[in-house]
Image (tube, rainbow, N blue to C red; front, side, top):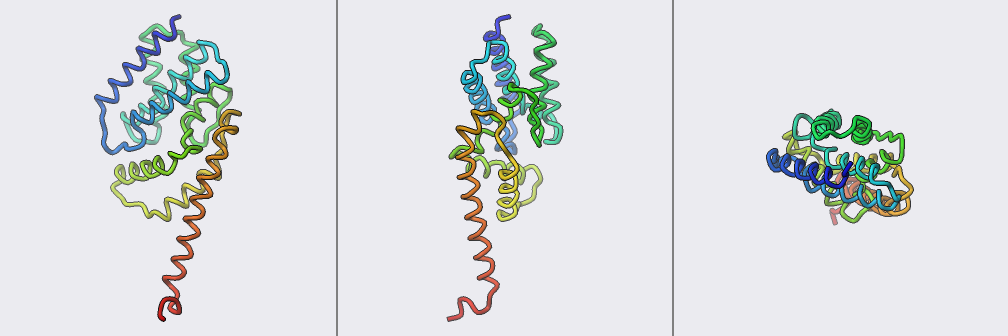
Length: 215
């Protein structure tokens, strides 16, 4: 099987899919995010010296993993994306055992993530790679904006920050690659959020203390 050729077809299909389904409310789960996940999945596949078959599985999964956001609600998007991948690849004549592995890689990204093998671990870490990078703050703001646009409700920044702190504290990278290269950056991002949270609490206390600021 010519894996590179099939991945090229997959890429072209997913690119056309995103173009046709453009949704301005999806400020985070869009084609740019998908491209990032594909890049990181391919990088980790290379790091682990995966054979062509295994690389095909994780990269194909990366291309399809968030397509379900464009065919329904956020809840259940993984299942819809996995099903879309299966249908498309089946039409290309891809073997069922490969399709099943790709399906499982996408489903492994359901939170809380519970990958069962290295390929699924790579997919999970590629999806949340930004947790350990300097782009985290920007990506986090885009995620908040996306939820606000989808729900039509403004989210209090303090409440969002608390939820993000909880998310980062409960998360751990699944691969050795992620732990070695991204865990430090994630801790720095978490510390930054906690400093902001502490300043916010102090400011709130001061604003409610009648003895402060009256001089």
